[in-house]
Image (cartoon, rainbow, N blue to C red; front, side, top):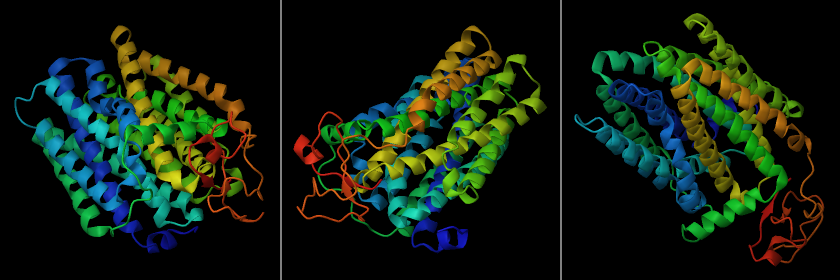
Length: 436
């Protein structure tokens, strides 16, 4: 699948795309409004950053407690229910007289709920599209994020000026409810990808299984850490340029849109390991902020750096190639939860540094750390070999049916725990079958 016509011709991709688009528009408008509201009330760069990206910190709680739900909930019911919850929660934040601590309580509660959404959305995308269409589909979803953020931050800035920050929050709530409606009446009913109860044990077991593979661990770290540190830079746009923060956010979204378009549509399959230069591009332009540039230069720096977010798209494709089919939703949910958690950590760190220095200095510091992390991960990401305990292509070990699938089969037993030399059934973890 290499064309957009083929992509949008796939059943259910259109409603899923629209559901995701409305959700991004809602989070963009409401995030800018909430950050403006909190900064106006407190004057604190740290609290402003946390109000916009604080929900991400709660992702680690949701990933621990709820991530098994990504494969165990019916996708339509999950997406429509989450849209309803976010719509109501955002509307409550807009109530006049709502104290700042009350807003943060809602922010954290919504962050816990959001930990499931990424796994459900992208697990369903993996079902709706053929394997060779996932990268293009994910690219288009990312492009919609860029477009909606460009529009959302631009429109959000207008709404904050015209309606006030609370009025913009109401608009965000309506958009969330719209995403719930599209999911409910646009998607077909599908069974959950996995059976069993949603539990802490299943969430923990699946996450440990995914992280026990060294190649997957490095991919996850590359997905989470450099991205999170640079989002920490973005969390300081409001303190850096209070009257023009929406412009900087729009430039960041435009750069991300360009990067995702090129990576998803035009990068040949053989070039899909060029994520390291993109992660360096994501960070190095922000070093210019040590000079406290004016708005025109800052806009160019932010747009150029954000092209590097395309590294995430290439790393997601690599993650899917390393992940068993029945854990695809959990794997993508773990990626989403971990990435958003690190974005919250990055926002908190950047806000703390800005408290004792300045927003511009904090951005440069976060960018420098991101460069160091990317260079440190390079060796582990160069190793394309699967774990030593993986059976060969023709192995029959660990088959739940006891039959051999043959050397040409795409599915084979994939041991998860490196200390166990037998297939995963021998480790008491159940059969995991996937492709390499």
